[in-house]
Length: 306
Ligand SMILES: Nc1ncnc2c1ncn2[C@@H]1O[C@H](COP(=O)(O)OP(=O)(O)OP(=O)(O)O)[C@@H](O)[C@H]1O
Ligand SMILES: [Mg+2]
Image (cartoon, rainbow, N blue to C red; front, side, top):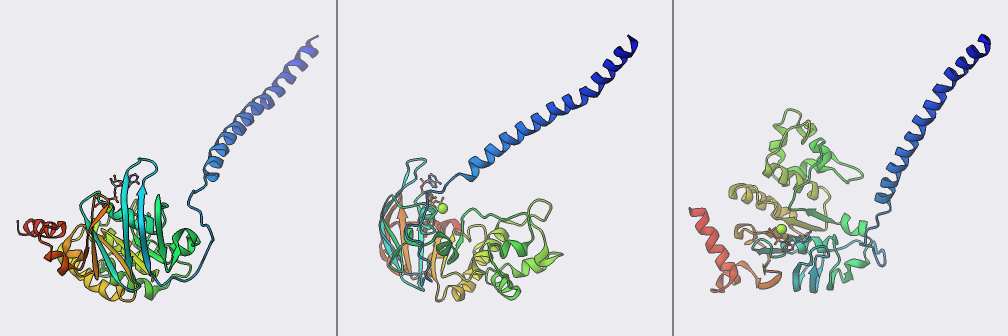
């Protein structure tokens, strides 16, 4: 009858929506499942840098590299061969050498971004592998060679990682890194945003903001990896002068390829192809006539005059 047909059509119409909705929800669920699987993959990623004993003591900064050899696991490049030195608390050790000689690798191993292939690295007599990672890294102010700034205010970039940011401390850190005057001349001062949707800092300004970030932690150990490479020699001298005060009583590792940056250090290591080829003060190394240090010095002097 007509009534049955009409009834049938109405029921079919009523059914289409739920069926379509069912299809739609199941596709949503499937997509969510796939995303969750990818997120889990990331969350399950374990770092192979784990502490053996979770020591969390306060360090004074007595650093020993004891016959350290290191091969990058992914490329198989041996970046350091049998490197040994001692850096006493409060002293400044500079590392100089040609590009690729292994300078940054020394810094990376000290912060324990990698574990040594053989040999030991000890801080205050304790192997770095025995420190709790957070405790170790909290006490090291590391200015990496590749500066990384967040798309955020300068204030948040400097105070990054601090539990209780302090205005005066932040300003002092900016002054010590010789970037304070630059910052306060920006329209919004320390609240100026950098990066995307913000202003673009020059290479030298980025390096100095990154340096302020390390200094504000008031770390026991300070590592500057080529942190003055983007500033001219005049600014370099200003910063080095300011750093003299900051470095006093702080163990510092100063990495550079410029003789002008390293000459004031207590001791200088000259690396060549992952090996220590010279070790001494500026004066002592200059006296070694056939040495790499002297050659670097003369090459750079000529470049400056040119
Ligand atoms: N993350 C890495 N993975 C694999 N190999 C690396 C890595 N970083 C550096 N190397 C290799 O290790 C060697 C030493 O590099 P390193 O960065 O320590 O040199 P550097 O002295 O800091 O050079 P530069 O003056 O250019 O900064 C190089 O041969 C380099 O190719
Ligand atoms: Mg380097």
